Length: 70
Image (cartoon, rainbow, N blue to C red):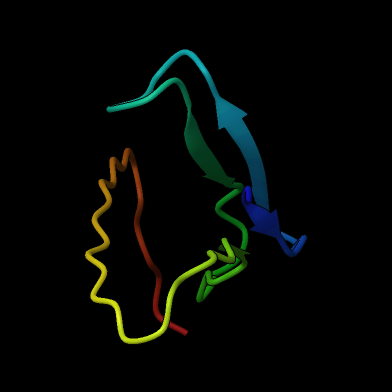
């Protein structure tokens, strides 16, 4: 199981093995700043067992993100 990415204009997705919090890599999403995106284009499918409780956690690091009206 790994990241699935739907390509969308205005965002480039890659795997970063230089900067990460845990493990050996991180998912990196770079926005070109020309579009205001509601980004939901990177995801993973996971195999789970029925009637089992799971806990998900993640970290997010941002730099220079802004949003313009519109």
